[in-house]
Image (cartoon, one colour):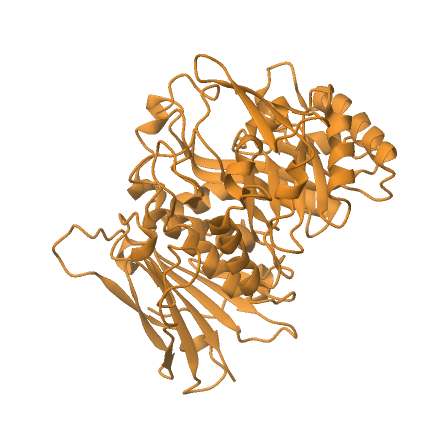
Length: 512
């Protein structure tokens, strides 16, 4: 398999080094980080691994559905208290002063997006407490409200903006914030297609909020929207939330392409860092067993993150939390931690403390960034159509093993990439008896000279169905304990070709 060079027109501006970031449900934050007396060393090590590779720590958004029922109590002794009623529904959460010390357990330099309740009661006191407890050196942005487009049919872009805009101005004045520090949107309903119809334009989203005057007070720094490609919130959607559907480049590209018009509109107004996916994961209502806790999800997470970057999404915040009874009365799971989480920081009803294969996808992304602040990307294969999409036929390209290829160019910009990411999303499960398929990729077109040496690192597991971190390796090592176990495995080749097995990915680093 070979490709022609596909370059400048579709190459992005420099990537944000915190491309692969996290959203942590407010009510579950202490479970992830612990507290000063009992810090969660697993989580701290896992976050540090990413910082060491990317050069900066991933950003952390503290938010989610529980943020709108979270309150501040300056007299509370414990870090966090959640009230759960007799039905098992988490009704509200209260933070105390020790919460900010838990936040400070994150790696040095971590930036925080703090979600405030759109219910005006307590929003100002929470903002003041966060600003005093963390300060501008840690808080990157505030957002007000989580998924307001799901509140009620009456809360359209105009009504939302009428609440949001003056509150962003008033909070800025109260905190004496001299520059835009707010993230608008946090909406969750998928864009309608085609996008230029009256129905689509009537949706509540970042574009319609900005058009309604959300930035009239000059407080908006970024726009956030949420993406969940599949769902188990109800039986109808659960039926299609399968591993085969998830691990498919065409499906995920078609899904993220729905946001391209919004991305273009927001970036033209707010700049190249303006559009983020502030919360996302694979399957809403907390995921599905044997789908989201597998190595298949690692492949999905990697391709989703790299594709998002290639269509000019600045950062993606993968959501971590737990099943909440108030999300849906028909969802598959209630209680414990979510099946789509990258790891379980504590023992819970859905499993023991453990690292899932999907964490390895963020290791790949962090090492790809490698401390660079000038790295640009383009989707090389399947490549771009005239409308900016990167899709082939429905179901992808099975003859080529569902191959997806991304190139990365360092400044000063040249014809030849510094790195290549090659993913083979063809499903291969560990339980089958036939040999594992692979595709031989000829990437010599992207090398500056014949016989150039490249370094190859592999992300792999025995199959897409594997659920264990200790069977998942990035460059030969597993991270099931939170720290690297094993020796680094790197391959050198001068042939301009490499084999990529089904359900695996490789990172190629090119040296002159």
